[in-house]
Image (cartoon, rainbow, N blue to C red; front, side, top):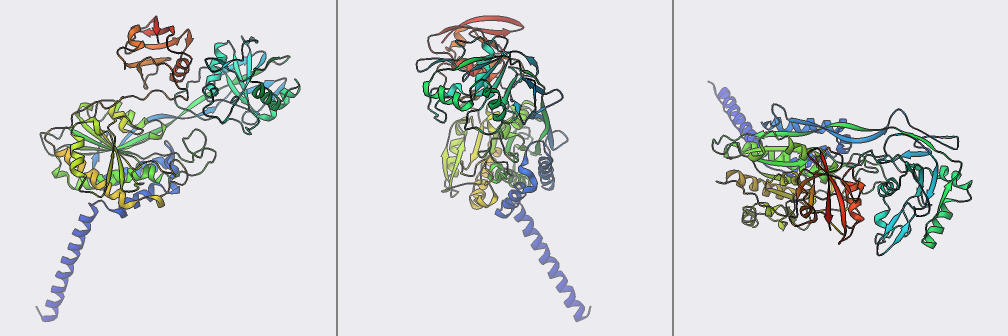
Length: 598
């Protein structure tokens, strides 16, 4: 070999070795959690092309494909059987279908122009006389006595009532609990009305939007909202206006009722709940340790968001339809899931327990993805030793991170205390297992949980939740901490032992401050009409003393029917301590009437 060839040969060796070292270094770096990679994921997930990641949309399917591709690239196996995708159906909307019309005084009204059916309306064709009944109240408590039905018979008739009530805008008003439209519908139904028509106060300009609201059944009464123009034309012939009615009732604090003679509305409502296909994304890292490999740690983050917002979406700017990027909520957690997946996969040989990495869909619609997962787990639930959830982890302020669920296992606090000095983070600890994110679904199944959360922020659920507000260094520090938590749980000789830390189910939402409770846990997965009892939470409570049992379906309270949890909460809101009322329950196909003392 001549001198020139020798020089070329040596240079080639040096070049190859150098490139190999660079590749090795790059490979090692790619397995680490890095700020650049976190931001790359967040910017992709929160980009306008993702459309706000609304469940069931094409843009959501793009996100599902992205998560699947990333997990595959890390060498992570499918975790939902032979697939990375765990599909499920969700109710996402409500729409008018074939047979919708309204005729009042021979005038044919147009849907969405002259009136709209309401989200809780039942379907059907109803015709009958029309009565005006003030605000539609029937209030009899220590503070307020107001009954709009005292001097008018609405049996077999349509009843027209005004929205809201006196003292509108005063959240502390005694009228506030009785103002919701659904509550007024229940009162009208109890009085024997065949349908209810709402008219607006003078402050309201637009028709009430037809939007799907989870939890409500379309089996109450036919219910519509009239446009201001239509309502004004109808009232003018009677010598009234919305303004004069509102001002008179608000000033006198007394009801106004009257028959609207020679007016027989005929209204046909035909509503249909629409469903979309959502999906969780599940990856599996199977440990090679024979003793522990069938035990699993679930690491989760929801990837869905609010789409373009609007009424009923959960947006804090519901009057504006605009892209909600959801960079912190929860592109930040999803980015964390992917970064942890990559690092855990590269260290697979050091893990004793196996890992399930789950991107949950439809969290914003009521934890639907995680609820489906725990009801249809790809591994046995008893083999899931803990669940670690990340939601909104990109908004760390003052180096403080919120950690929930610490009381759900006695091993968690000592472990976190040992890590406290390692990272430049301050811990704000909560022992409660229940919380406003997907870990709640696992806690309800007696699985220890940890919830990592950077706290609420001004941009939460608005179009301003963009990648520019992400604290990258804070998120990286937190993900490094979470990795160590996972690593410790994976390698511990014994899995975390479950401890109950607070209630395991959330009571039905209501804006009414209840004076009494039954002492039960409602079932949120029941398809029965009524309210199914998931558990008796107070062993000496009214339900327990009356002989109610888990699995009973409450059909009525005080002889008033109950069809869902919202009606249940409304009925309870009418009661006070010391009352003894009959409660109808269905048990094993038989109807029982139990006497309940509150």
